[in-house]
Image 1: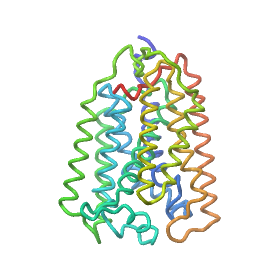
Image 2: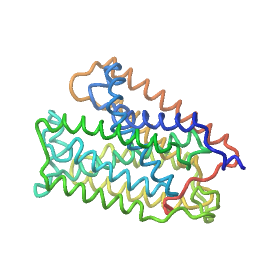
Image 3: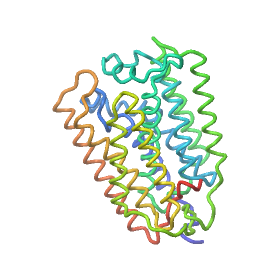
Amino acid sequence: MTADQAPVPARTRIGAAVGLLLLSPICAEYLIGYDQIISNPLDMLTGLLVLGPLYGTVAVLIREAARRTGRGWPTMLLLSAAFGLVQAGVVDQSLFNPDFVDEASWDDDRLPTFVAGLGVSVKHVVGFVGGHVIWSFCAPIGVVESCVPRDADRPWLGRAGITVMIVLYGLGALVIFKEHSKHFVATPAQFGTVALFALGLAVAAFALPRRRPGGGDGSGGRGSGGRVPPPWAVGCGAVVLMGAHQLSSPGWGGVALNVAAWALAGGALLWWSGRQDWGPVHVLAVCGAALVVNAALSFVVEPLGDASPVLKYGANAVLMIVVLLLLGWARRRVRSTAAPRPLEGARSA
């Protein structure tokens, strides 16, 4: 039995799953520091009791579904988009609630691209769903998998663990839904539309073919020939495109910039990631760039409500340091892995 065939130690599996369970909500809610909770460290810690089940369990389940069925990043991206729609359209209903945030900035961001017939802001659809795909789910998955590179494409949980994740998600989603439904409830048509699109994305995710042995898909084979940029260049490009997403204006020009950035990023990853020189360090560069972008932007983001500047900037600094240390350790782990296997390319499932 080879090292690759040996069972993953329980400590490694559980540790990786717990790490993802915690990193996902931190990336989703805390890293960019938009909420006044950023100035209350105790509230941030206790908030993980709800945010962990709401975000972290989804990240773990998305990853387990893809890895257990022999699929990879394309499947995880589509599932992330499906859950992103559910989170924003059903669980907290932020896509539809005009008073979701009691701040003038909410309308400033929402109204320029608001489509009355649909009851949604196109800017919010692109921003919220894209934000969930990147920062809530995919970036944390990529970073945590980089911390355990030998087991990056293997399941981490058994049936009991998956059941626990499903139950925790149901409880977390119920708590948030009830809280946000006290003063606003989306229409049945809006719920139905979100459910239909989310279902379509989920079906598409599992309609993709499984990874091909011998291809540049992380299964141990070699991809197609051709050069790819070095990881540092991939990371810098990702920083630019993700920064453009986060800093885009509220109007239609901002939406166009967002769509162009995603199209460029997706096309580049599709082109490069199936090649034999594309490897785990490139994946870490892309996912790590997402964390660095939000951690850096947190210093210029003004939190909603009242927040102590001293505590805010202190929390921003601590999170930035933690991100850099985590990425440094993950890179060391990937680099030190003997004969690292390239993760799957975007054109393999």
